[in-house]
Amino acid sequence: MRINLSFAAVALGILLAATASVQAHHSFSATYDGNKPITLRGTVTKIGWQNPHAHIYVDVKNADGKVVTWEVESAGPTALLKAGLRKEDFVGAEIIIKGFLAKDGTPTVNASSLTLVEAKKEFLTDEKAP
Amino acid sequence: MKRLMIVLSVALALGGQTVAFAQARPDFSGSWRLNVGKSGPNVAGNTPNIPFPSQIAVKQTPTDIAIESTSVRQQPVSAVYKLDGSKVSVQAPAGITETGEAKFDGENLSISSRRAFSSPAGDIVVEFKEVWSLIGNVLTIQKTRTQSGDSTTEKSQAVYDKL
Image (cartoon, rainbow over all chains, first blue to last red; front, side):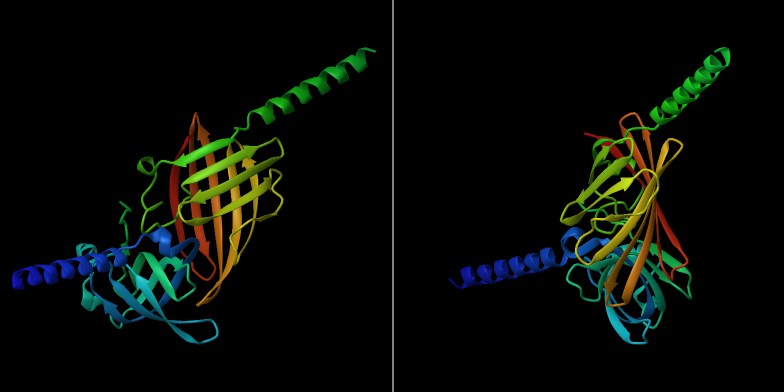
């Protein structure tokens, strides 16, 4: 019985992990508006370096001077590393993001390209939907 | 009488040329499906550079071209452009204001549009330019996108097969 409970706990853990992974790996079309492209320029304040997508937090100043923190969904760490971009390259760096607005109106964007201004490094995301 | 015959002949010849010129325009009418394999990179999928619609329905007359663009889980965008290049309003999803114009440039169709919407970063204005060309049952669209205040321009190309 104890063994069965252990198996159940492990199975539940795997199931929850899989569910979280599926939720994190949503499709572009479900979350983002392909009719609303946007280019942002700002300073990276934080980075979530996890699979399947890295999340970059960027402070962007509006035309009226107000600073808005944007959450930028990017490719995963593996793809960024392959492009020569390390986690340490981001925080504090000035960045240009080209991408698409979230459908829910929040300051969230899906990045199709990232450019680190000082390093003059551009990363063009080329992930394809399965 | 002889002079009248000459004038009529010239008029007929010129009229014929005009008709022939008009007929030289390709007809883009039909339903078109995006061929991702033949298109440039980043036209679809999870991280498109310039997203292209997955399907386009076109109805063309000598004076107008009606275009409806649809994509999975995205709001459709449709417009009836006058082929004389005059500006028209595009039926865009809620929250987007768009105008555009279309005209033939030789055998290519050129469409320019200006899209405006609000965002947490303020009001955004994006200009698109498309060049459509037709070879047999294959439609190729070259598209550029420029955002106001951004000096760079994104370019991409998509290929569509006729259904």
